[in-house]
Amino acid sequence: MEKILFDLECSQSDKSVKFHGGGEYTKTVFEHLVINYSNACEITAFYNPDEFCEQWVLDLIKKYAIRLIEIKAIKDLEKIMSDEHFDVLYCGLITKYTDLQLPANTLKICTLHGLRSIEMKEDRYTYYYTETIMKRIKWFVRALFHDWWQQRQKSAYLKSTAIFDKMVCVSKHTYYSFMHYLPEISEKICGVFYTPYKHAAAALAAIDHLSEKYILMISGNRAEKNGARAIKALDQMYSEHLLDYDTVITGNVPNAIRKKIKNKAKFVLLDYVTIDELEALYSKCSVFLFPTLQEGFGMPPEEAMRYGKTCVISGVCSLPEIYGDAVYYMNPYDIGEIKNRILWATKEPIDEKLIAKRLAHIINKQKNDLDSLCKMIIGMQ
Image 1 (tube, rainbow, N blue to C red):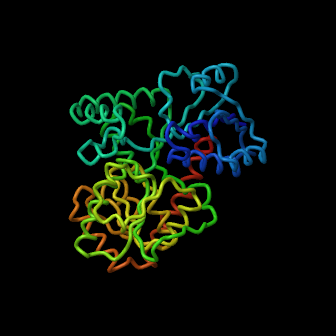
Image 2: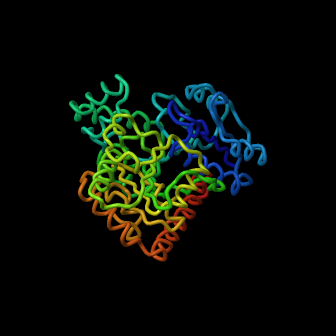
Image 3: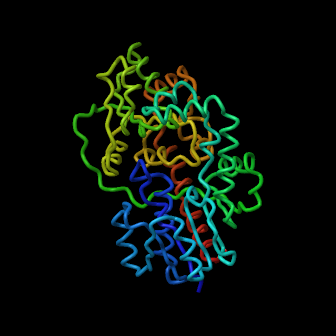
């Protein structure tokens, strides 16, 4: 029976957020592995007890009697793996795996989510998200010395991936990005498995004081989500009397962007919302707007499509690969085209049958790919 060591520490809160995409991915893989294959292998997980861990994960560990090792830093992994042999180590997020010395006789598998730090470029819109002096210094460095910064990021990825023997990607976009930017590791990449849908949607909660018709955006505090351009486009539409929908944005939009809004009464700017509140927002919105600049997979449109919602999303990175003809695409760098697609979506919503058909395709592939990944981890394929 294979002995699996599973990294749960990478699913826990990072310095800025309690929940993050790589963490949700890791927890979903862990859940499927434990429920479906804990009888076929011996699973040990490690985590940091000082960091937030969702209760349902801890309940799952208790229910299936999964052995749990506590660590204080990822460096502790060296001692754990030198004291005891494991056949496989699996990690869903590799950012902390730099300069570790791990046993060569353990097969080390990881998932690659994307190359955002290499692919994204800084501009005046991303500057709006630099609310501290340190963030502004980093912005200037990345903007003025882009080639140097890109090479530095490549080196960091090479260090993080060096110890792994097998890697999988969450989309073909991600796969070919690594082939392009980091051909040195291409021989280790052995598959493309879609990002699985997160653990489970929570029960809906009521959100008070919202218009009956609103456009929803999320992650308003993150430069890569491109809210600054989208807000500018929407604000212009309000000034031009082109839009009779309000706009709801989650995620604490930076003050530098808030100050530029002319039609403030048309925007509902929320702070961070709970999972069940986000589900409520998805379920009640008229249009979901996702003007992102870079995604390895891009889960949010799927979350809105599960409620039959028309989505206006960027026609870049992985998104056309995932969402096919069931969404409206726009150039996320072009204010005029963003306005065009928003107007189009409000006047001609996408047929819910078309949305449901594409959604079924995505869900089926996610389920099959998740199972294939778990079988790879335990040595069944």
